[in-house]
Image 1 (tube, helix red, strand yellow):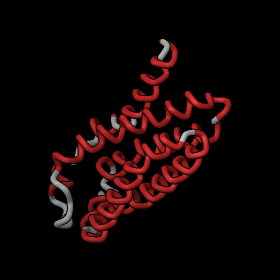
Image 2 (cartoon, rainbow, N blue to C red):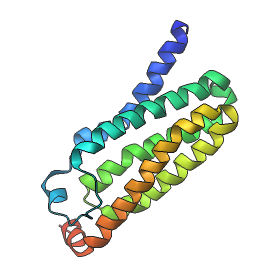
Image 3 (cartoon, rainbow, N blue to C red):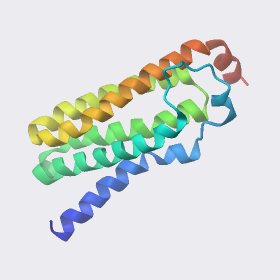
Image 4 (cartoon, helix red, strand yellow):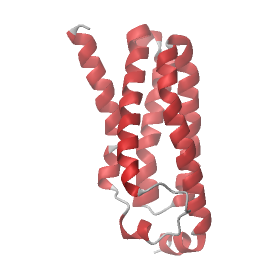
Length: 164
């Protein structure tokens, strides 16, 4: 791997992990602790390592497509890739920052569709890049179910808090 390719890989990884930066700013806090959550919710400590692996895979996936086709050759797939990263970054401030699990549920469904679109568009360019996104899509599917469950269980609590 030449230096240029390595630098682009680092840039894809930095962009991917930048989506996680909102999680540093908007922490779960007391509001989240007080919510009624389903029993099947994983322990809090599991989220960080799972997301770390997923963000690394997301970055590698984008780089593989870039390496195969370049920006010009994969403008639409890489554009969709960028959109899903922005949507990924937006979920945390909506859920934990605004305390709006209902709005976050809508947002995560749009994120899910963007991940699926990215995966489908990546496949003809680089099948391995598409496969790297499958665990991400699966985890976001699970996260969406968790988000919906939390919203449904706490509608009256979240509505009264959002009007403050």
